[in-house]
Structure formats: structure tokens, C-alpha cells
Figure (spheres, rainbow, N blue to C red):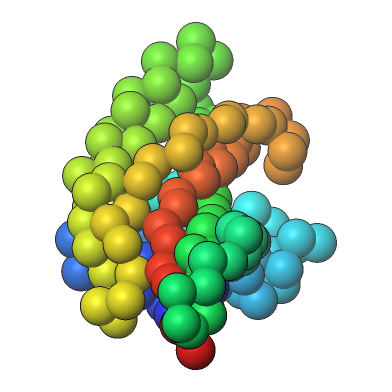
Amino acid sequence: MIAATRAIADRLRAVAMPPLVSVAGAAELEAVRDGTAPESGACYVIPWSEEPRPSRTLGAHWQPVSISVLTAVCIRTYEDGTGEAYLAEAETVLGALKTALAGWTPDPADLLPIDYGGTRASQLAGVGTYWLVSAWSTSRQLFN
């Protein structure tokens, strides 16, 4: 899970800036929680889950493992009372995330291509500050 999270963060830094203005991890997001919302376009990559599937034994242990990672992007639109600026920025940001990650195969090579798992938007930080939280998944195989 950690390798996938690092690979996704590196990919976003290389391919999706701009429109992203920064890419950080879960620890940095935690530090922002009680302070001022980050700059619009700030992205946080968060390890979410690692879920093993039933193993298959073929002379050795073989088990697929599904890995989920979240991206959370802050969008601040204080100057726009109509919502149009938010929608335009959200569309640009989501397009950049999908272009950078959907179908991309991360390194290390034991990870499969990234699948897009959907996005939810929420107004967690008060009026004018929104978060787009997207789910991304990959998988790998455990062999012993």
C-alpha cells in the first residue's frame, strides 16, 4: 500500500502540476485539519486500504491483494457566488487526475494498472472551500 501511495504521489507531481499546485501526504493533511484550508489545487495522497483476497495454493502460496489510495484536492472559490468557478476548477482537476492515473502502471512493477474508483465532493471546510476526494485502486500478488 505504501509503495502504491508513493508512486501515485510521484506521478501526480510529474504529470498533474498544474493544475495541482502541490502534492503532499496524509501527515500534511492532518496538520491542515485545524488550521486554514490549503491553497486551491493542493492535493493530498492518502493510503486507504489493503484487502487480501482468498489465496490459491498451487504448490506455493499465491494471494491477490487489492490496494486503495485516495486523493483529496482542495478547491477554494470564495470569489464566486454562482458555483461556476468551482465547477470549472473541479472539472480541470478531475481531468488532470484521471489523465495522470487511470490506466497508468506504477513502479514497482508488481503493481497492476491503476483503476479509477469515483469521486465525491464535500464542503467540509466551510463556505467556499470544497474537497474532491477520489478513490484509486491497484492490486498485486503475494507469492511465498
